[in-house]
Length: 383
Image (cartoon, rainbow, N blue to C red; front, side, top):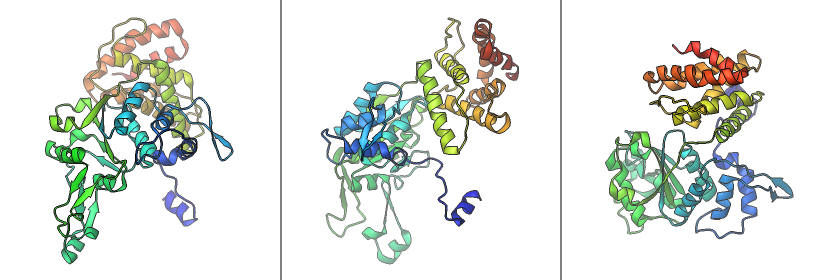
């Protein structure tokens, strides 16, 4: 309703999540203006500039007389990003695998925005994804009226990527049935899409991929065995494993940076409370690794304790503080949101979380007091 009222007044409704090429448009423009590197055919930026876009620049770039800072967007293995860029430059498909919440989709989006200037050409893999949703389908009303003519064809992401010479993103590819996945094999090998329905001439029935076309796919290791990729399709991709964050400081920075972005997008004037973010980063790091900094052993959880989940827990706690507690984060609410993140994967993890509080968190509360004491006292919510 609010957006309808804004539109009636001539205001533009706010987009909840702009595309990467929109959100980082000044950075991309500054990189393009200062890009002196060699560009593969069909690329908007050189591999060196794509790397800078994702990993950030120490110095601002000049754009029309003003300074534009290029922020670091991925915190992890820099070499992985370099290998991914080289893979795409060599016209090999890129497969990003790893645990849920390790930024596979974010990397895919950033690479697509920097290389092609477009990250929206996406297939979302599900058990119901059909070959039509990958390649092309037909406008059946026009098909009945005119027959199989080019204007009756409805492009799908692979068709669009090949025709425009841009990257096609394939999210959660292993959730698709095996025969649907394998429809990519000939396209990845020959860079040609055959359209047998268009039989009016040789050129009409064949779509040749333009320079710049490629496929970036993602798959969760937790989905292994659901629809395992065929060996033939695997050979068309270079595989890169995106690991979980191992550093508490890095995880804290990701939590705070991402939540600041979410605050700005939502119009929330909340300030980041670094001590609470650090408590959450330590918790996720220890539960993920199975060991505390006090060398106390922690039972391994079955659920996914990803950085993305940590961001969600902290953001929800901040929303509670903003709307109900005058901007003051409640450690009890933080613990409640943490419980929600744990039990949604596996209820059997709840006793393990309780054991973590009774051991590692109790030690921290005794040694440090303060916010760790408040955090420990919130354990009563863990039933």
